[in-house]
Image (cartoon, rainbow, N blue to C red):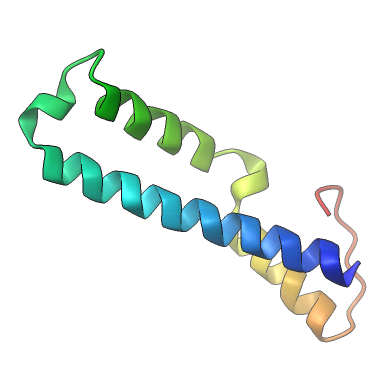
Length: 79
């Protein structure tokens, strides 16, 4: 269980960091990145769509990790 909780924590943190990187790329690319069909626009859209999936809920994952770290039972289907 400890490994599963740590893996879940690391996965949501990686998602956060990847989302930040895509946002930086999008801002740096300028106005052309807004056009439909642009690979940067597609990457930005896909990254943000994935970030709202229940498995990428940062607060939930970190709360579960914290509970596990303090020995509180974790009852969640996503672990």
